[in-house]
Amino acid sequence: MDLNLVVLSGRLAAPPELRVFQSGARLVRLLVTVRTDEPRHRVDVLPVTLWDPSDDLLVPEPRIGDRVWVAGAVQRRFWSNPEGRRSRVEVVAEQVTFRQFQIEVTPSK
Image (cartoon, rainbow, N blue to C red; front, side, top):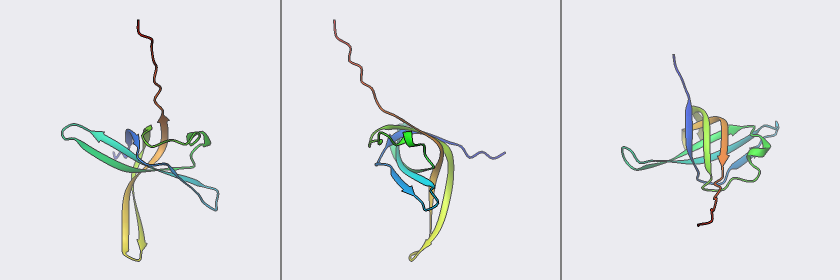
């Protein structure tokens, strides 16, 4: 059995890019930074696409550095341009959740 499942927890690396097509379909593109410390310190910036996002996902507009959770699948897209055939690996999201940090200050005694 094959399984194509990706779950990411990281931070937004750039403002979301929203595209609206003539058909009315909407596409939001995100860049998500994922950091790992083991076995080596590493930072990956991963492209994520989400088709037809709910309106409340982008209001208020997420900011660079906001925590984001993504669940979806890996997909490789191909296209041609004047330089030849190109490809890109991206995460096609089924679910995206933004989490803003809330700082609680407790008075010291």
